[in-house]
Image 1 (spheres, rainbow, N blue to C red):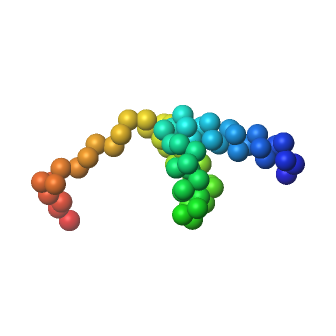
Image 2: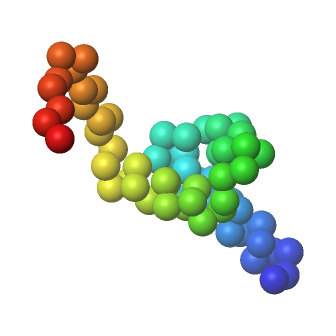
Length: 65
């Protein structure tokens, strides 16, 4: 891959990540922690589709198994 295309791809990933609510520093931390680039892209895509925060589960919830 040539350098301009790589730089463009990284810029697009950073922009999408920011639109999904992640800072560039957070995304770098994910990658340094071992998260694969593909997983980071999936996480960004998921956050863009589901922008509202997950509803916390009450501690009084009873699970039936």
